[in-house]
Image (cartoon, rainbow, N blue to C red; front, side, top):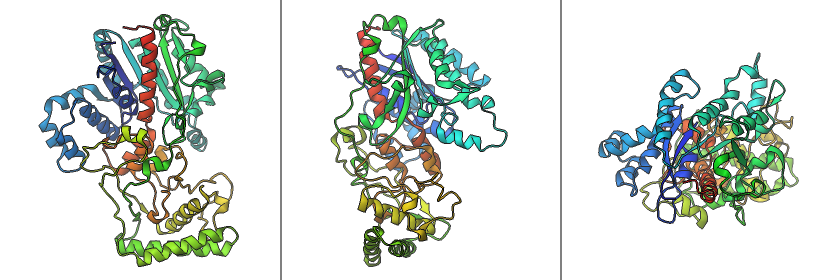
Length: 510
């Protein structure tokens, strides 16, 4: 396949799907997918998206890019050094709120131009916003007075994806969303049933697209489209619905039995948190709502470990083991002459060769986006206990396993609804799902090293999501966390793109 499929990415976020597709090369070093357009409405995510598009304009990344992401030069200086590539990136990306009249008026002629210039066809990828489908989002919506699901436009943003699918008539599409989509209903109607039928008939007649499961299994119904990303080399337990469709006229040429179509190849072992976080520069947490300094942090953390130890010893039983180690750590902090910093740019190697080949960049001058956030004094003791408990028992403690003296003043603490309110990401397992909620607090994403006593940084979350270390996230730290949490893991996207390419080659789509 000597030419490239022009690829359009909708609801792109920071560009996880496009990153995976664009990274694929054939045996001649050519890229079979050319990202023709990526669309995102949120300004900070768009800034990240545009910068990554700029990065892709070069076969050999210039030193100025590395200087920019390490803070040595400004964005204006970067743009001034490469005006042609920056213009190409600006032409390839658009900050639009899809579904609005203004966006449609601008977008449709662009799509028509992409379609007309695509000699072997187009590919459509993207994931309409998932807040209305996710279980957490639906629970939150039920708590909103006078909330009417039928009036929530987020339920129907997938229709804009369908509208563009109908206009573009791509050779194939990939649509990603949360697993909660399977159980979402509007006016008693299953949303996944409606979405699947709309996708299949987007070519103007029933079954104009053939939907293929990405994973080989014996499951039936829509659940066959659920991907467990930890089975495919991603160090994170993330379960998503991914719908891949091939235009029926193209698929018919492949000779593939839809029931026995090619599928993603699982890896023999699941990567763990340690696969990507072990060996990273140690950081200390900051202090929130009080003056922060290394000495102030030492005092705060010594107190936190002692308080956690006292509470654990008071409850006794199996927590005595945790109490003993907490005391040992408090003494280490008291005697330490050097404390870790709050941020680090040190570039360190990864132990997992499969992930290192994807994440690492030998040309990096500095590791970006690796800075800790601040935590309140009262939470430091809970972090200390939780991480030390996980170190002793190789799992995160549940709420009812916390010492009574560390119980937060939360109305639902003992209800069982928030059993994982303080959750440690343990070294020897994939992480739990990285979500945008990490932007609000770090309680669900506590670092496994007790002596760092903190939540994960943006870079650590990005590694769990398999964003390469040279992928720079624009915006403030809260915005960066949201971008990472909402994204599709790029390394998974690459595997999906490779599978799709295999099927298209069998169909001889060119």
